[in-house]
Length: 505
Image 1 (cartoon, rainbow, N blue to C red):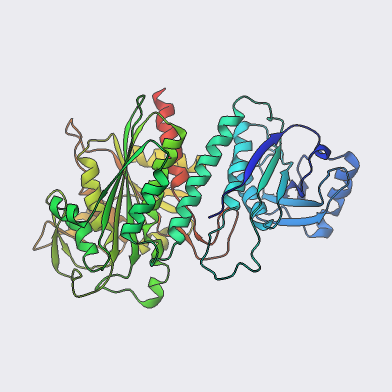
Image 2: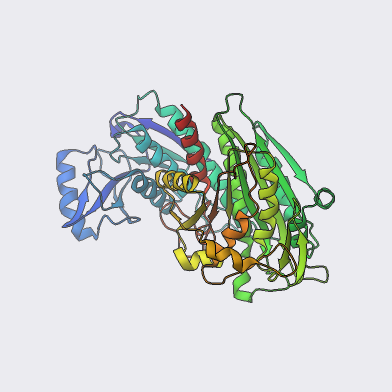
């Protein structure tokens, strides 16, 4: 992964900056494209505005049009970046983030890009920087040749009236830390399962945590077996690569809350004995996206030095069919003692997550949030770009608000009581599958059974985030989102933690 992009913000004249490309913004108006404020001469602006329709410029989101540069700018290329429709004459932070990402992604091969897009707040400048860093992401693929590959943009300058704001440096630092976390998540998801399997995922967690105040503890198969992690061991027993549980601990002396994050880390999901059709397996290297998001969220929170305690639990296994794999009708004893009849070995994510949720509960956190590429039913319900959140109403609402602020799509779904009886089993405490219709919610109802009590005896507030669709982009890149791993949920989780801190002030 390449992430050497650097940023600076200026308030000086454009001609004093020697950039390869100058970017200005165009919105999509009701009567055609609208050129937004740009620090160009009145004559240049007038000429440009008159030319927009003839150039095919619409101002639509993701549209990036290159033109020859103007002498007054000092840049050899003038770029018109679409921000889509705007309200009150100004683009939203997410529109800026997306426009910057689309622009930087499409300008690969150019070294230095200057943005002259209207910004009136520090957070708008930070949104541009974050979008640019996300758009510059490239996976260091395993191609034998790099011929034809263009290097990502290395330097971004932002022209803004906020250049001298004392809060700007911290905002840009946050953008850098968060975008690094998202990009690291993308890389883990993009790795082939021959390279990223339980043991190497655990090693990657340790490597990424170096230099940060995060303690990493790896439970190998011997400890998992000894301590009774029947879900993780059961799912992983069909693979020649044994499972792992990784515990990440970040503690602050000024902590205002104790939070637990649990992530699904199936490094490859064949379906096990209940094997998937071939086409259904082709993207199953992404079934560890939840654990990757949790890992990098903890590291981002530590990098930002937020005053909270956060524990991450990465439930990692490879789900393979073999002579040692679990079978439909096997019964597993989960961590904590509950028994589960396995009716479908392809409903394996909830089994490893159950162990992680019990382990998290035993430390009595204030809130538990789990993240998983859990069900195909999530994609059926909400499509490829919108994740679902279920669980405690307060936690779900807070996550939805955090997602809105971060620019990620998240939608609350219910947990109907009538779904629980469908998980009953004649031979165990419960079965791992139940009602097929509304399967996303049935899976969440299963997970809910493993949320423990707080020290006061109340059920620990909890929410489940299903990212099955938005964790992996099989279509063309858009905005700051590349093809394959997207890094979904990291920005929402970091924003949620920041909101927890803000509410305690």
